[in-house]
Image (cartoon, rainbow, N blue to C red; front, side):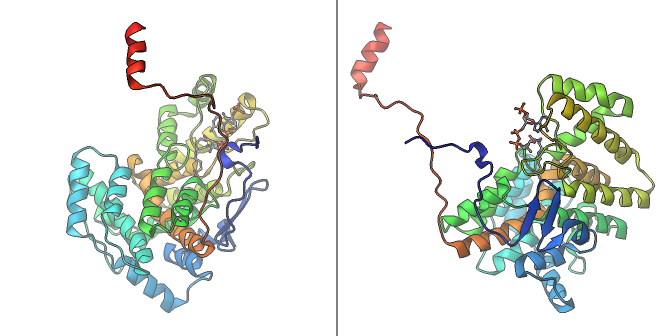
Length: 377
Ligand code: ACO
């Protein structure tokens, strides 16, 4: 029997979740029941993690307890050596993160907090090792966002910088049935363990059509350089049939609401630091890209997605481009874990079907005969 194949599972609803909801037509997103514009610029990341994991914002004691458990995570010596060797061997940062996470021994309920605590520590350690600098342990008195910037630079960040990173981490923490979250849920559905699920998810995240987009988006902005070059540059890419990184989305047929939140965060940070150069250029490039995408891909409704302004914001925060997708994982880790726990409660293995498009008239030929045919041919 022939069945319709939904390439990319477009339009297929694969899970029910209370974690995040998307209205793609209107360009709206809810995280744990709150609009992203409401939550992301106000919460610290630990508040968002508590909201996702427990369904409500924490009180003061709950927040302090969660922050203490997250910032109390320390890098095991073996994992630190692994990071240094993998960096020296030239492995990409996101692959070093995957290796390092996989090397951790995790037990029971504490695994959730350990993975959220471990990810920024590992990413910062990768960054420091790439520069040949000593790894800085977390400061237990700092919240995750400030700690991440501290471990990267050795200096506690300004309030404006910590706020900007909190907003980024909140914004990116969860997003419906995206490819990496789906991967995590599929692995969980087999009753495999949490670490396997998030390590698998990381493999999906790093692809340029998903969490790997902001690095090339920044390269595009830097290559454009000045507003006058935006139109000819983008036109050339579209003439060559290339995709503009940071534009388009499976779900959104309007501007990705996360793009607005991240652009505002970048604007606030730039205002605090007195440098709006890249942000001003990005706004011009966005307008030009949307206009040209409509010209080359009429009716597809392609707009800026979260990754376009991620590139601007993380660049302004001093995160090296090769660490953009790893920084995304610092945030999304909490979302993956929440989805894994939801999936465990579902308790049913993912097992879609495939349509067989191969032949059915094959017949066995002995090796001798195949060799004889090859000799003759
Ligand atoms: N640039 C140029 N054309 C595009 C783009 C783009 N960024 N995105 C989609 N299109 C075109 C496609 O070429 C296709 O054209 P066609 O109808 O002539 O074949 C049409 O729009 C529809 O594209 P699909 O591939 O069907 O869209 P899909 O929903 O499968 O892809 C995706 C969504 C992967 C995000 C896509 O828009 C893309 O590749 N964007 C660039 C990468 C990117 O920014 N990824 C980050 C996503 S956000 C995140 O992961 C957090």
